[in-house]
Amino acid sequence: MIAILLLLASTHGDLDDQIAEATRRIERSPRDAALRFRRGELHRFHEDWPAALADLRRAAELDPALEVVDLALGKTWMKAGDAAKAREALDRFLKRQPDHADALSERGRALAALGLRKEAEADFTRAIGLMAEPRPENYLERARVQPADRVAAGIEEGLRRLGSVVTLELAALDFELESRSYDAALARLARLAEASPRKETWLARRGEVLGAAGRPEEARAAFAGALAAIEALPPGRRGARAVVELEKRVREALEVRHEGR
Image (cartoon, rainbow, N blue to C red):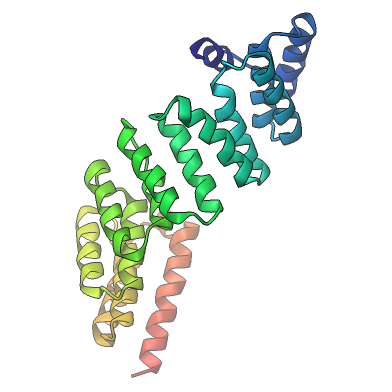
């Protein structure tokens, strides 16, 4: 398997050229399972699912011991939109390699697509535990299938392991708002603002949270602080699209709150 992956990693150039070269090699060695696997993976990267599946199936026929084919088949079936067949292929692979984090993550996606949330959560959790360096996306994928009473703890686990990653902090903030845990959301925003050299985004979010919590005067003060922070930015930064959109949102919020007084 390692040799095959190194062969894939050593390829260069345009995918069409690589596929053409792989085809020439297959014509010279039609029973070479590694070449079939390589071309199947190239077709997968090229998003030609039927061609990828045909080559991967042929590679499995030529060498049933080539375990990595089932992992590639699972990924290809997922991309092709058939989660049930993806699960079948990944089940076969994981039966032989039960501690493969990438395969567990991919099967978790297949299970989630099939509506098997509990089983998907178990696969995502096991995959995360096996990863030397999990990514924020791994925790977010798991959060999407977790029951509400475990989402917060799962995201906090990611924050403890990875540090204060913005995508995870925002996911935690969204969950706190959904569950109306406004004090927790405000405390999180305070920590994020304190650690950030740029305050305007966090002040605007604070205004939104305070508004949702039914604290209009404090919300107005937060929005006013966000606007002041925006106006203090250098012209180049203030003209950035994201800042322009934020300023528009803040001014609209202040106008609504002024009219509502």
